[in-house]
Length: 241
Image 1: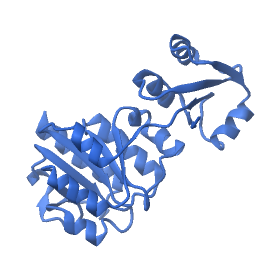
Image 2 (image 1 turned 45 degrees about the horizontal axis):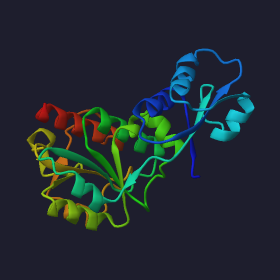
Image 3 (image 1 turned 60 degrees about the vertical axis):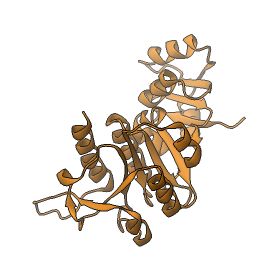
Image 4 (image 1 turned 30 degrees about the vertical axis):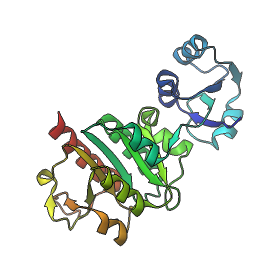
């Protein structure tokens, strides 16, 4: 039985609310306060609850900020791109594509914004990517329970598959040929977010239909990857609401 630990009150609450995977056991710190809502959710779903020590929770989370609660659960479902495309034929769809995002906090933050802005899926590579870890899930604050996760072995080939399915691929780069507000995010769109330091890989960038830049005017000349993704996703939300 495969399982993983997620921790923190909000990620656990969203996992139990979304019901997209099978929880095995909820561990609550003995004597901790304000955990009654999690306890009630677990009881309503017939999930075993065990009281344990803070030290034991620290071991489960490798000293993560667990707030007195850890959920042992089945992993999130990971989709194959071909299967996902066969099941999703909507004319309006946003897929956020991560090219070598290595920081799990960025991974989680992008997932959170993508979910909040109505993106359909988050696509990432098996290699050259932050792992789908408890740290990433904590940073996503439960958002990964609601967005489809697609893992691929060859990102350039995945972009070809998306284009064959009538997706237009937009890449984010400071030297883009279009300003953010000039991009058309209506219809089926894939948004590529590049590595924190190096940006998109050349082959990935060549696969993009167009490159979008985010204008900035202050003394800081670049934005964090997750901040850039957030700006683009909010523009997507503006255009499609």
